[in-house]
Length: 140
Image (cartoon, rainbow, N blue to C red; front, top):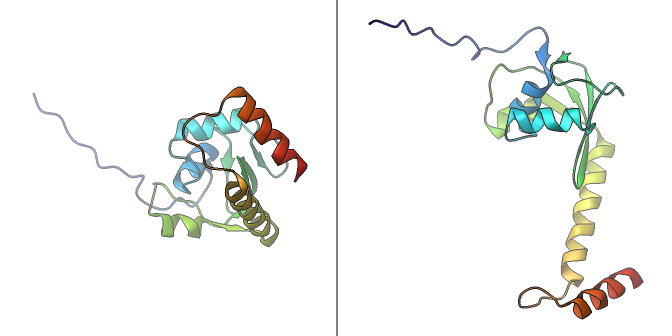
């Protein structure tokens, strides 16, 4: 029995609309398309201030807000790609607003401070130690 192997045509850049979940995967915001689709369904993705479906077609110029704990991204789509590329190439698919970059840097600095003031323990804290830690953190 002979099976013809059809060449893939999704290696080229896309010029007109592309599915939102596929674009988020190609731009490396999510590791899988199903994770991207779940984030869209759960309202963590907004396109032009509207809650979309995973199958929504987007074009260059679309504004996307992504809430991916603990970060929030506010980006503008600059290009579409038919396949997942390297991180350097994926960074060319969008531009991030300066406010979004500043917010992520502020969050990263806060997380670093939180990590530095957290005491190092061996293993899981007891109930008493956990309550003492929470009380200490809430006082700061």
